[in-house]
Amino acid sequence: MKSVTAMRVVALAAAMLSSAAAAEEMPASRIDEIASSLPELPRADGAPRTDRASWGRLAATDFGKLVLKRAERLLAEPVPQPTEEEYMEFFRNGNRSHYEANVGRLTWHTNGLALVCLAECLEGKGRFVAKTVEYIDAVCALKSWVLPAHDWNQTCIKGKPHIDLGSAAISFNLAYCLAWLGDALPAATREKVLAELDRRTFRPYLEHARGKRKIDEHWWFHMKNNWNSVCNCCVVRAALAVVPDRRLRAEFVAHAEGSVPYALAGYTADGYCSEGMGYWNYGYGHHLMMGLSVRAATGGKVDFFADPKTRKVMEYAYGYQLEDGLSPRFADGAGDPSPALLALGRQVWPDLVSTAALESPVFGGGASAFSLRAFGQEPPPAKPTMDVLPPRTWFRDAQVLIARAPASGGAPGLSIAFKGGHNDELHNHNDLGSYVIALDGAAMCGDPGGEVYTRRTFSDRRYESKVLNSYGHPVPVADGRLQRTGRAAAAKVVGLGFDDDEDSLTIDITSAYASTSVVSVVRTMKFSRERRTVEIADRVKFSRPGAFEVPVVTYRDWTREGDSMRFCLKHPKAERSLSFAVSASAPLKFRHEEIENPGRPSPRRLAFAFAEPVTDATITAVFTAE
Image 1 (cartoon, rainbow, N blue to C red):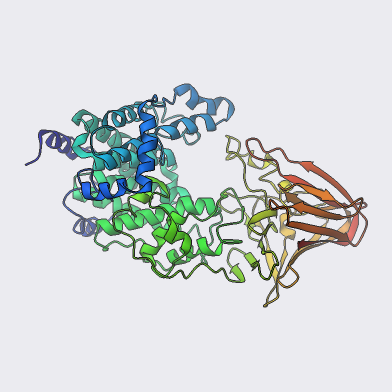
Image 2 (image 1 turned 90 degrees about the vertical axis):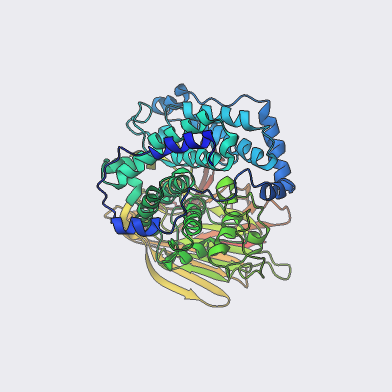
C-alpha cells in the first residue's frame, strides 16, 4: 500500500500536462507501441536510495568516500543564490560567466544539488536531506532555469519558460533527486519540484512537439548541433524518471526518436563532428546517454543506435586524436575524448575497447553518466582494441587529415591535424587550411581554439574576434583579405597521397578570399614519418601584384636564430623542441604580436609576408621535431 506521501505525489503528478492539446502530430500508434514496452511506473537509471546493497557498495569505494567528503563541506556552506542582477548582466554588458558560474555551483554536473543528493544515497542516513531540500528550494526559486544568453527576448525571466541547455540539465538533476531519494524528501518538496518540472520543461516540450509553440522557441528540436541531443536527452530521461502516466512517457520518447535523425545529420557521413571534440563529448555524449536510458526503459525495443552512422560518430572520438588522449582544437569545441563516454560506448559496441575506457572511474562524466555505469550496466573488461592509433585518420567528407608518427627508437612522437572543409561549419571558425602540430604529448603550434563566450560570440559581430576570424589562425592573408564566412568559402582537395613514410594533402582555398585579384591560393601539407618533419607550402597567384602573408600561431615560448628565418618553439619537456624554417620565392619580412583573448591565454602570431607585392609566389615552412 502506498504511503500518504507517495499518494499525494502521484495525484499531483497524474494531473501534469492535463491541459495540453489532445491533437498529436506524432502517430498515436507509435506512441502506443512505445508505451507497451515501458514499465508501469516511472523509473530512473541507477537505483533508489532504498537499495542499500548497491549504494553501500559504492560508498565503500574511493569515489564514494570522495563524494561524501566533498558533500560534508557543503553542509557548513551557504547554498549559492544566483541573482536576477547577475542574470541581467548579460543584457547589460554581454558577460555570461558570472551567472553561469553561480548557477553551476548550485546545480550542475557534480556540484551542489547533485553532490548532496549523491551523498545521501551513498550514506542513506538522512544526514544530507535537509541540505538537499535547501538546494532544491534555491533552484525552484530561480525566476528562469534558462541561461541568460539563451533568453533572447527575456521571455523566460518574465515568466514564459522554454527549454535550453541550462534548463534541461536542471530538469534532469531535479528529476533524478526525486527518483533516487523518494520519500526521504518531504512531500511538499516533491510536489513543488513536479509542478516546476511540468511548468518549465514537460509542458513546453510537448506543446512544441505537438505544434502548439513557435518554432523559434525550440529551434533545436529539428537542428543539427549539440543542443538537439542535450535537450532531448535531459528532458526524456527526466520524464522517464518521474512522469507517472506511461503513455505520456512514451510520447516524450517518440518525439525524441523523431528528432534524432536531425541530430545525426550534424555529423558528416564519416562521423566527423565539426563542432570539435569538446562538443562531441557534450552532444554525442548526451545521445549515448539518452539512447542507453531509452534502451533500458523499453527493454531494447526502442534503439537510438540502429542507424549505422551512430557507430561512425562513436569512432570519431578515437580517430580525432593527434596522440592518445590529445585532440586538435579546431572550431569552438576544444577538448579531448572523455574516458567516461568511451566507457559508455562499450555498452553499445563492445568491440570498441580502450584502456582509457576500462580505467575510467565510474563517476567520470557526472551523475548523468554515473547512473548508466555504476549499477552493473558495464560489460566485463576486455582486451583493448583501440589503444594503438593508426598512421593516419582521413575524414574524407570533412576534409580533415590526421597523420601520426609515434615515438620510436628515441625519436619523438610527431603528429599533425590538417583541415579543409568550409567556413559555414557548426561552431565555425574561418579556418580553411588550418592545422595543429603536436610533439610528444603537447600541441606546439597551429589553430588557437576558441574564446570565452560573450554576447558578441554568437551575434553578427562574431568574426570581429581575431581568434574566430582567420587572422588568428595559421592560414594565409591574401591581398590584405582575411578569409570570408559562408558555405561558398570551401576547400577543394586537389592532391592526396598516403604511403608508409609520407602523407600529403593539397587543397585549393581560393574561394575563401573575396578579392578579384586573387587567382588562386593553394596550400600543401607534407608529413614525413622518417624525417619527423611537417612541410606547409602556400602558393599564391594574383592577376596584379598583391600582398601575401602566412603566420605561424603558437602558445609556446619561441626564439629566433639571429635575423634568420629559423625559429624554435619550446616544449614543456626541456629536452624537446619543434624548430621551423621559413623560405620563400621572394624576400620576406617578419613581425610578431600577441592576440588578445580575454579570459584565456593569448596566442602568439609570427607572421611572414613578402616585402614587396607579388604575382606568383610561394612561402614554405618546414617544422622539425627535435
